[in-house]
Length: 505
Image (cartoon, rainbow, N blue to C red):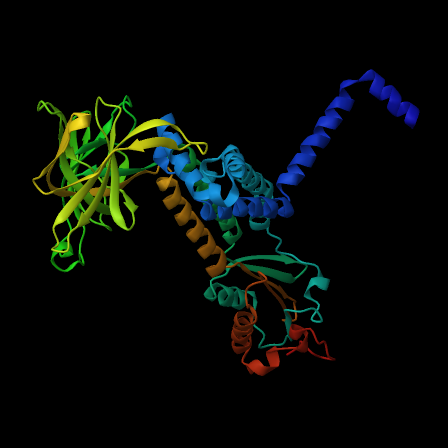
């Protein structure tokens, strides 16, 4: 035999390669259809998700430019370096742990899980189709043995129901009935919710769409935090993006905030423009966003934005406008402003006097280098304080700062989620599939009617279905059709405890 095999291999050398390829393909197929492999994938993705929810993640705007990324990572280092060390934080950055949900690892995990579900669905579909489409009306006599569970036998006689009566009773119970006769014996088969098993394919489709939505959103979605002062305009996407979107804060209101310190509403009058043309305008609230240009703009926060006017000592205006104070120092609003055209910046701290008058502390600084931890090394000047309408003059810096008043900025979350449509379809498919599977389970009944009227029944259903009561009511109907009390219809075989004469009526 080995000589014959060797001879065949020599005649067809490609057969060995083909067999190895078939073996490799079969191994891959078995791996992707393995439940253990699917559980392992879910565990890995769950662990990555826990990491992403535990560790502070980079905001969406960090990926707009190298400068934004560096600034966001500086915040991450300031948060974790003292706890973990700069080296560990750098290693975590290389492992993409600060943007887990858009990382290469998470994306690969989602794609592999999608592939596994698709392959499992393809593998199960032929079997599900055969289970639903292939029907066997005639069963062997041993199948109706009353010693087996879920079997009932009704004795024959002149009052025994005929095939038409049995068919009618099954149909009243919403069974689709097929019948055939062999050698005087009539076999009937009742099937209800025959195609229910195929609903699992709809559920699988829902899972696949959920994963596709996650992959699409993580790779193609965008989420930006936008700080827009009153009267200001800000770009949503990087400058140069085709169809560039801009948002304008036409006004912000927090009724009750300045009266008793507790706001009962937060309202931003927001306009969205594309290439200079107005797309939409709306007063947005916390739970009432504005959708325009593929983005949804949510009201997320607010804060003070003092209106400053910067001039040189000759009166030339260097800056004029509100300055959002998005940080805090000592529990007070804090912000910085780079002076245009100068290697100079201003640190700003907002406070109020005992009389409730708002004051702004201004501290000029210049960057003279970089500290060992990567933060800028600064040298500060002498601070000055201004009140509303007053001017602070820094003669040595050829600069004067006027506080023209106080306004507010609004913090918006601009979110583009291209996977949202997939999520709704996935949710619908999953709910429909599960509802059909659990609320419309398949039930089947086989009946064998002998020439003398003896009727043998078998009732089958899915494992999670309590079919006993329904099967019992069916038997009661059959007993009632022959005019005999229902107590005689049940045999001990139904509960798996055979007795002499049990299972007959």
